[in-house]
Image (cartoon, rainbow, N blue to C red):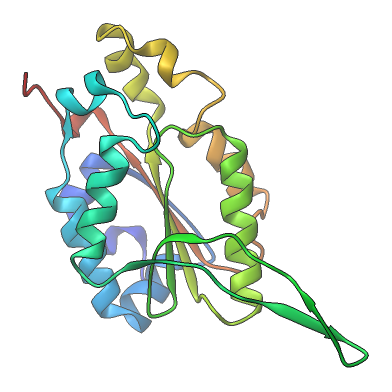
Length: 197
């Protein structure tokens, strides 16, 4: 079994990391290329002052940067057309699209959405795992400690208590929200913050 310590020290120092159903082992042993992609993207990411000050609109600069970094490594947004058949009659059973997907690994970026998005993501991982379309799920979000930075920058209200952050995700993860799907979650820490203005 591969413990969380298999992640490079720099990742463990700069991200709060949790897993469900041995996700690290599944990723590293069965999906070594995707594991390397993940490690490389996480190692190069920095949370810039300008990204927080600018705000988001439809998508935050943080989400855009992360998605682009994965897209450069051949990860892509993915929608699945799924259905069930009852007595020979097909019934559409749609899943939600995944932010980044590659070779059976589904990855969601939840920077500043409403916290029910975590329920949606975990349920989607569960369904895709049961349908054999995904073998492992990954969620990148933010640590609670970043609220101090947001407050200092006068952006605290934009990152309220009912938005996506680690303490909202963990009870859902540990409560089995992802079902049998192995899930790795990573929270961006204050140590990644850089003053660039």
